[in-house]
Amino acid sequence: MKRLKSPRKLGRWLLLGAASALLLTGCSPQQFSVLNPAGPVASSELQLIILSGVLVLVVVAFVIVLLAFIVGRYREKPNNNAPYTPEWSESRSLEIIWWAIPIVIVVVLGIFTGIKTFSLTRPPEATSNPMIVQVQSLDWKWLFQYPGQKIATLNYLEIPTGQPIEFVLTSNAPMNSFWIPQLGGMEMTMPGMQMRLWLQADKTGVYEGRGANFTGTGFAHMTFNVKAVPMATFTQWVSQVQSSKPALTNAEYQTLVKPGLAGVKEYSSYPANLFMKVVMKDNGGQKPMGLNGGM
Image (tube, rainbow, N blue to C red; front, side, top):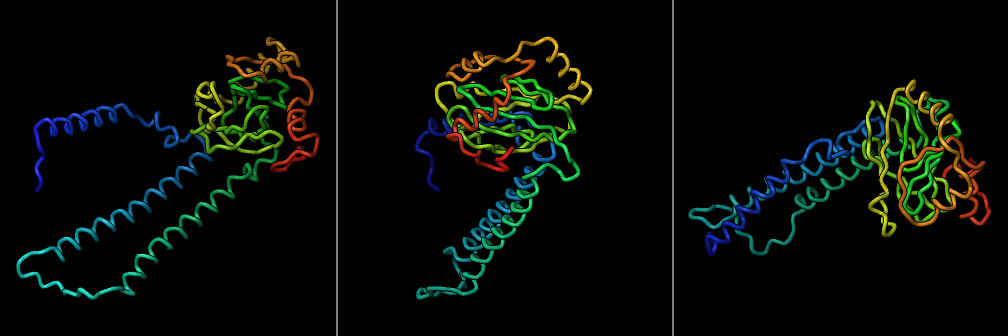
């Protein structure tokens, strides 16, 4: 075995290992938000992550076991009776094995991914009237409109627990990606298009949302909190916003559209058809594109 050239090099490796262990001890399930789901969509996606991990581990374990077998069987040692075949070029059995295993893994993963993906494209069929939230990504802000409640919020989202939420997304800025890791996967926000994503929070809490596409200087600040509360608390909050908060005017909206940062705000109302005007503007006045673009 080749020895390390000096105790100093050994010390560096030990220091690196200790630092890695120290950093890992600071990790908790809360920090790995994707692995700590708070809703049915995120839970379903976590199952896919676990399935993918298990299939990868199967491959890794097989390779390690095969490596150990080859090293033990064919290494140079006295009285080694392993067959010596210097002209050996191929083995149909081995080729079947190393082609069949990846094919089976891809097929299994593809089937489960397809089933999960199509089942998550729409809210549950049992819910005939999901709550709708219209989302606009701006530079560098998030504007949320509640058509059913006639209110709006900036860089803040409050939703009721146990209620499917259908997000309708567009952009009045460069393309971005809307993501609440603990509630589910991300969806793009694109000018002139309406994309859809349904999520649901099964338990109360505050979850972090963010923009997942780099969009310039203020990208790192495109985060927002999602507060999931019981329906009664949500209804009370809506009434409080409607009665005590200012309206979002066209003039203020034009200010929000300009690149820059902003804090959390709540609005008792917003200009009529604001969301559709943004979609139509960025689509050249044509019929909106995207999933169910007629909304």
